[in-house]
Image 1 (cartoon, helix red, strand yellow):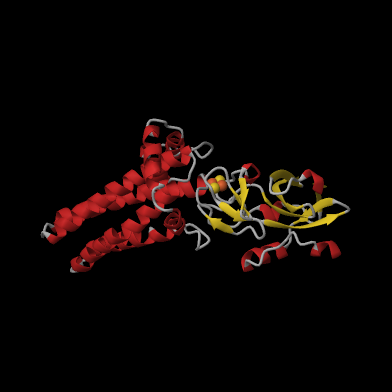
Image 2 (cartoon, helix red, strand yellow; image 1 turned 45 degrees about the vertical axis):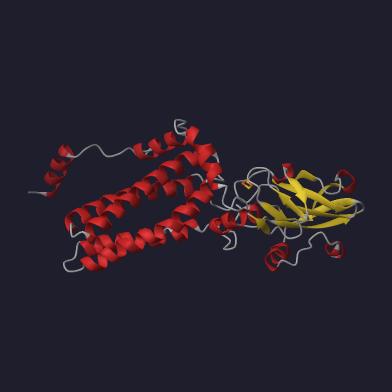
Length: 325
Ligand code: FES
């Protein structure tokens, strides 16, 4: 049979190819989930329970000390173990190793779940709706794997394998929702990462120092980039990117205390001197600008020096040194 005839036969029986000029059905369904309010009554009570974990513990779970979210690392253990178990289940004579990996995955599911809930409790509602379904699928998968392990221990290997494969399918669906949360909805991403790339180089005038009350956050812009200005005294001020690295909350509407500014949305707290995130949920620091005062006018610029000060924790960008340059 000629190849062209094979193609025409195939196109006659094949379902129509999905259109590529509009969102697919899966994406449309997930986008609908973002705005589906039916599970909304569950969100506040779950959030309250998660927030009972002490702040320091939640910061560890967020990954603040790592500098990026911990949850994507934690999920590697159950996913890796269960995927490997599935491969071994398909090989003759490897059932003991497969059983052990099912158990390893179950043990690794706990830190993955707890860190996920900690992150979930500090998100916007559309994120939380997708995250709740993601969590329900994961809980169901864990239950299936628990049943699988019990069946394997009890010698019902066929049932154990069936439950494992069903669980793995749910983990896959749940993982794609997690991908939607992370990459489409940008939960867990650094929302201040772009600042060094979009800020105009050079010094920018932000106004007379008399316009900045000591200890009060004031919003200004450096070119198109919103910044928060906090005067330390009538001669010195700190300037940080205004949009919080966690989810872009406006720091200029936050509280200033103890040399830090606290985001009004979820309470991430950034040191004014170097932008370091001393409290989460933010896992990334806040871009900090160099400042100088020239003839009573505050000026700011973004330089790699600001990044060095942030990294070393030595702080001090509002130091007037730059005024000598
Ligand atoms: S936006 Fe969440 S802490 Fe700032």
